[in-house]
Length: 339
Image 1 (cartoon, rainbow, N blue to C red):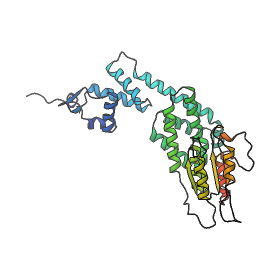
Image 2: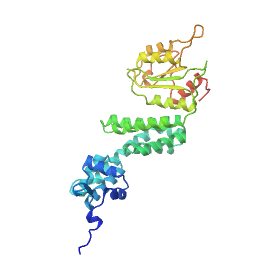
Image 3: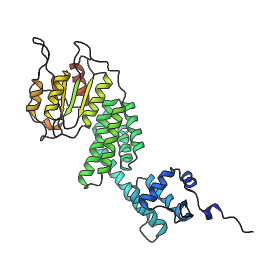
Image 4: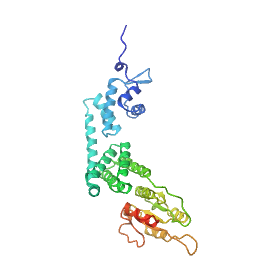
């Protein structure tokens, strides 16, 4: 009577291998489909059976992806290391990615020196470095966790100014100085920051009452796509209980004017990241917009945000120096007192 084949001889099922590696079965199927990391043999032509050599490749793949190597690079390196040992070792890929992480983290450390002085030195620097490392690894859950922890620990305004912004700037500078190598990192980090801002704690904002100030209207000027700072301001206003309306990127002039007339806002914040998009005539046009009955007509306070307005004298149009300053100003305009 012949002996039954051992599990290793027969090969592992996808479910058993997923349990062994600590990943989802769908992940193994996806890696097989996208990167050719699949079993050499399939039972009856359909069902996957993973042999020891297949398992070795996947173990190498998991080690590399957990250290921050992009999946496509990890797949190639894992197959080279296991199936073509004479090729460049997989460790070299991990080393290059680790170097990328440290270089971005180093830029963060240089950028957040003022923040370190404000928040106690090494703590905030370590938070920025940890956030940068997670972003370069494209580890979205870790990025989300670190952002949530920063907001809980420091409050929204400080977390934005001293943790999120320095890390975003550092990643952006690495992207600008190295072609498109870090564009996926910046996109992932920006999305996670946006998500964290939307999930930030907020006060209950009641509906408008007769005679009460209108909401704060937040909009990027026409042609301006950088809306993330406005999202931070929107989250900060809601945290204070100040009603706000967020219109986002590149709002056309006609739409801005219509929104002001319909809402009767207490203030309008216009964001311009670059001088090419900043338009003082538009700002003054909105500041001159009136509504209400004769004898009691009102106009909004128009607030200028972003570097695009720098160096342009604008009497009567306040320009806050940062998020905390903007929150204090807008809370006062809306009658909520100091932020």
